[in-house]
Image (cartoon, rainbow, N blue to C red; front, side):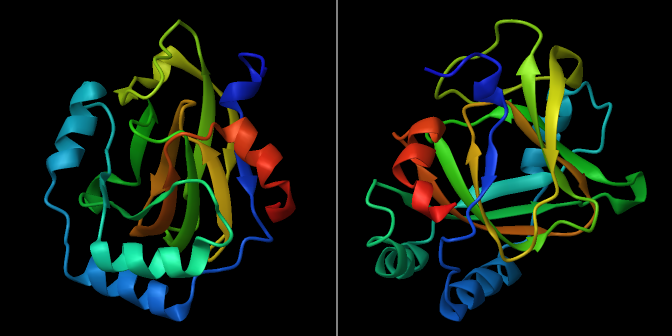
Length: 203
């Protein structure tokens, strides 16, 4: 059983997980070119922060064609149930400076495998936190203000590289200046610590 501190500090490079094929990368790039941001998420993110920061526009999409391609390539490697997603985060108000996805935990997935086709800019990072208060509710989407959490780690993700992230721990995306385009395998029922134990050979 992980301690409370350990469960919040979790992002791991997976250097032995094969990169997706050019077919998947091109499919995701074409999907992005046909699905531009609409400011809906940015408005919600901003509301949770009392409009004090420039919040990113962001969404994860499920695409049936990507699902087929991803299962053909990764089902033999990841035996647990997973959902392929396309993640798009973007700074739609660049005149306000870099943008952010504030600290949050995710709904409907325990572990996320993330592959950044575009990283979001040279200074874009993912930060992990522990909470100052008892805010943790598993499998609910909860976004909190920065005053409610304490940062414990920051990772600048490399492009075209796989990472595992504990999305049931508080995390944020910082300093987005360009599009952040992700291929994600969302694992709904395998907690992060158990994922690392089961798939240690991918590290």
